[in-house]
Length: 70
Image (cartoon, rainbow, N blue to C red; front, side, top):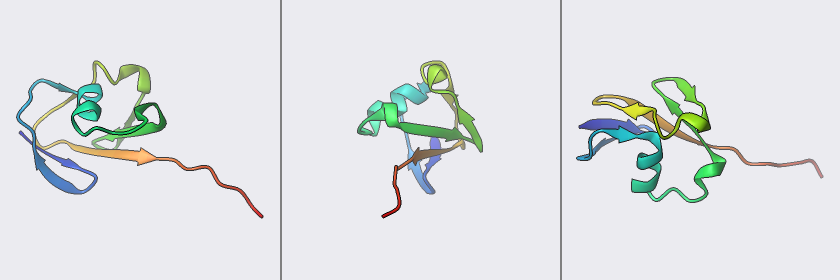
């Protein structure tokens, strides 16, 4: 299947494919610190194992960084 991950079209052979498995395949470091948007909707972390990715879906990994002022 073809999916778009962070704006890049990719071919993934594994189906069905959960968000949790996609994070593993992509070897995302600290997946507990990543938010995932699937077709424009944020997926709750508790649902990563059951939320599935389908052909032509758009997935964005969102990395939030802390910061502060000087």
